[in-house]
Image (cartoon, rainbow, N blue to C red; front, side, top):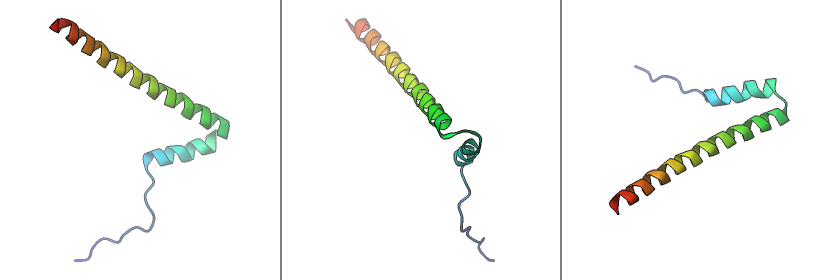
Length: 65
């Protein structure tokens, strides 16, 4: 029984494939703007999670007193 042959090139990830399509469809400025907007969305989500965590902490602290 022989082992399966090893590929010389890696199979692109889904993200890599999306970026390739994006580069064909959008100009550089549009790509940068979209990525900046997505980074802002992720940062807003992180801050919202932090606020929820801080609120829960304050509620637990108030309940102890």
